[in-house]
Length: 280
Image: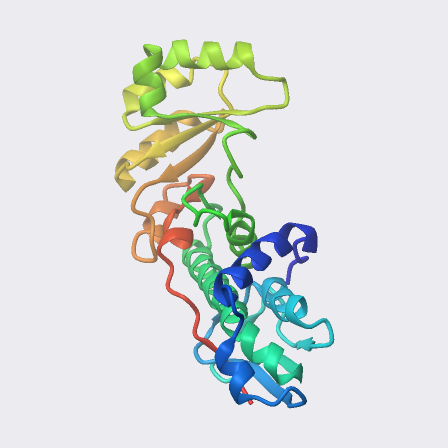
C-alpha cells in the first residue's frame, strides 16, 4: 500500500472526465429510468488478478456527483487482488452512482493495469538490484495518476517533466555538436541540485561520458551482452539505466546485467487494463 495522491492534484482530472461524459444534458438514460429516490448498494470487484491503483480517482468521481455516496475501500492502492476480490463497497443515491460508474471504472481499470504491469516487471527483475522506473510516455493529462500507479506497482518514478532533471538524448547531442559540448552547456546552466543524465547507444560514447561531470548514463537499446560490458566499464562511478524494448519477456535478462535502473514506457503507454466491475 502507498499513500494516496492529494485530492487537489486528482480532482481537476476527474472533474474534466466527468464533464466530458455528462456533456450538455447529463445522464439522460439514468435520469429517465431510475427514480430520484432509488438507492444503490453494490461492490467494485476484480474480475482477474492484479494490483490496484486509482482508488482516489474513483472515489472522487462518485463524490463529485454526490458527496453522500459512501465508498468503503477494502483494497487500497498497491494491494494485490485475486479474481473475485471486493475492491470497494459503494452505497448511496442510485442516479449519481450510475452516472459516475463509467468514469470511476475508467480510472480504476486503467491505473490498476499500469500498477499490475509494473508489479510484473518488478517481480521478473528479482533477485537482481535493478529497479523499474517509468518514463514520460504517459497519457496526456494523466501523468500524475499514471506515475502514482507505477509506485503502487512497486516501481519508482523517472522525471515528471522537462523541468526536474537534465536528460541529454541523441538529438540534443546532434544539434549541440557532441556529447561534451552538450554536457558542458548543461552543467553551466543548471543549479547545483539538478542531475544530468546522458543517453548513449555505443560503448565508445560511454567512454566519453565517463570523462564528464554526469550523474546517470542511459544505456539505450543495448543487447544484454553490451549492457553487461557497459556496467563493468562504469564500475559504480555513475548510476546506470537501461531502456529500450523492456517488457515481461526481456526484463529478467536486462536486470541480470547489473544495471541500477530499467526504464519502461510499456507500463504506461501499452499496459492492458485490469478488468474490474461495479455490480449491485
